[in-house]
Image (cartoon, rainbow, N blue to C red; front, side, top):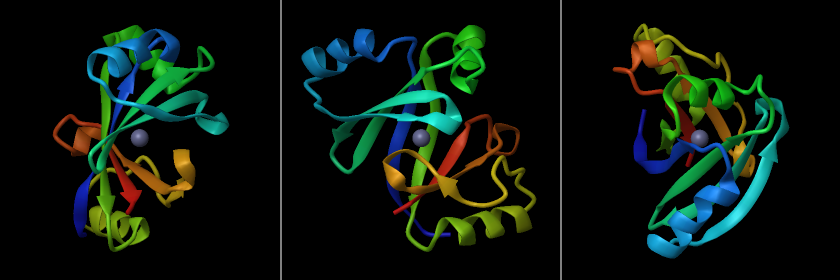
Length: 134
Ligand code: ZN
């Protein structure tokens, strides 16, 4: 696969409203989009850092995987997303061939309408990894 850059870092927070003042007023980043991804039961806020983004993830339901993450580990870095320039489907096929455990067998729609897929942290040196359309 061809990774062009880190598309975003996903950070789990209990509340986007409470987290944003740190990112905006201390780090001086600008939130340019907030959207809810219904099927993942999360609200996301995006801030740009050069070519990379910070994706704040807030659970919208106690069944959200983000709610479970916050319960177990508290707020913090949740996943890293790499932009792949030769297609998420290709990258997934390559990962599967190399014995990587996939969370998503096929690409699906993530925030910002991009095609995404997750790899299981048990196969990725402990880091939940997202592959993202470049
Ligand atoms: Zn993400």
